Image (cartoon, rainbow, N blue to C red; front, side, top):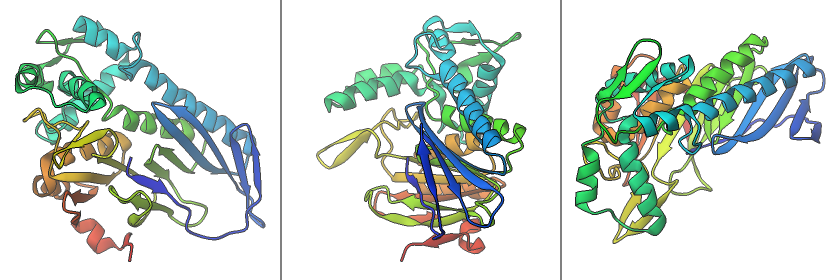
Length: 338
């Protein structure tokens, strides 16, 4: 996504590298920083923890990875036997409590964004992904026929964890929220192992628990158009910071960028904004809101951010203008790159 993690302070470090495990030992301190990376949910996920016990830190990280793997197993549309794939094929399925909760949370974000975030976008997103690969634009008739299937309110939550769709042909895509849900679950796992200070970096989407030793974690926000540049840095603790943008899968034709984030109301990729970063207390909300606000645009999106408690945001429009929520302007936790 649009974030890159940078440790901005210089300290003496001893690097011990092996089997994907990095231990940072800081002279004169009792705690150690342990970092491990693996590939899950289509991206590299890096977990960093501070702990006095290296064995406990290692065990906590592996347990967190295992939890993320569990979420991927049920929520990936790329796995034929995942719960979401079975639901999409059958239109009705009895799901696990985990999947039921994830779907409920996704629909709650749908309500908050007035449908701008809609997991039933799947028929349209699948169409556009296929066309983007071929650098083609779908026909209007293709879009209009599939648009009739998009409405998260046509998901029915029945008793005994049963889910069904009101319309045949409906399907859900959890790509805009499953990673956030998985990160939240992983943080809970770390807390169960008595980890108080940690960072999970899931392909640029981040949750920070506690502090980086004695200071807030420093996160650099990457420019959505210039990969080698950053918009600024932000210092956080106990927050999620997730970004959605138009730069992951796209092609350009006659000066128009066609990408994978689709507006449910139009059936076409969003145009006004190029990236949205959301900062809030949990990852699932940050993940879903980032996509929904990208669809809403700079004015409607920033209004939603200001209306929601404990939510801050940064919006970059297609002209490069950067919009900051009032909390970021006034708090001093965000420093614009000069």
